[in-house]
Length: 157
Image (tube, rainbow, N blue to C red; front, side):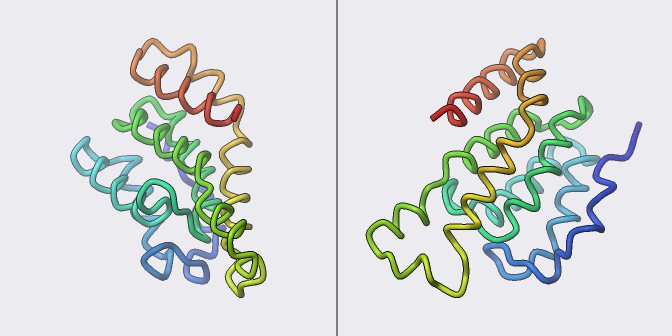
């Protein structure tokens, strides 16, 4: 089995933030999703979701950097929680928490943390892998196709 996630070391995880603080734990969580048994993979993905898409709609600085690795995992048939990863990508693509807040409180646009930019960058990262999304729509797994269809609809909105 090929080892996915070879580019993890190129991301400065210790200098970027997720919802818990330092994003240093993200590589371990991604590796656990990649090679873990179903129980371990789902637990790691749950922790990852809380760090990069808290509450299912609040993204953070580390989200955009994490998204390409999520796409890579979805392409790996041995990953046991591909459907849940696609659903996480959909949540990231639909996230508008910071933009919505900034429309009411424009000062947020000038905050020292670029929340609105992080949100936009995360959405762009999800949109960047159209090829994988098209392939997912032809998978034999009906649940995976359904999740991919929902992601495609979120990206079209």
